[in-house]
Image (cartoon, rainbow, N blue to C red; front, side, top):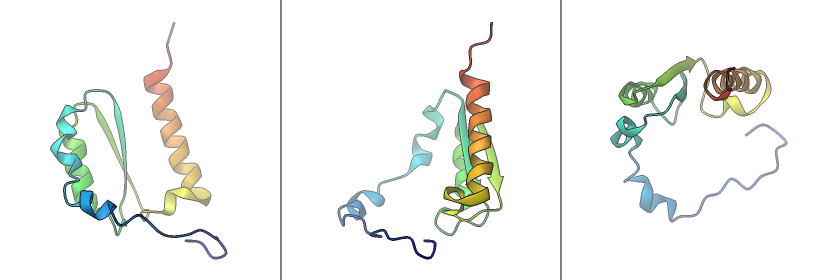
Length: 98
């Protein structure tokens, strides 16, 4: 959290009941549409190796790794960088060409 940000950093305790069963890699192969997967190389919460493995199971995944931590893309220049990557991906896959 950046200094001066006034938010309640809390989550319901019930989330811990589902976390043990949360395994996105178990369903990654069912993703058939184009998918953008952006991973932080310095992510302390989600290992990049696991993200790469899940993306590899997706039929049409575009995997991008950036030298960022888990929360870096939400503020400042990393936000602009990730937003541009997302916008380019959406333009490529959603715009109808005539």
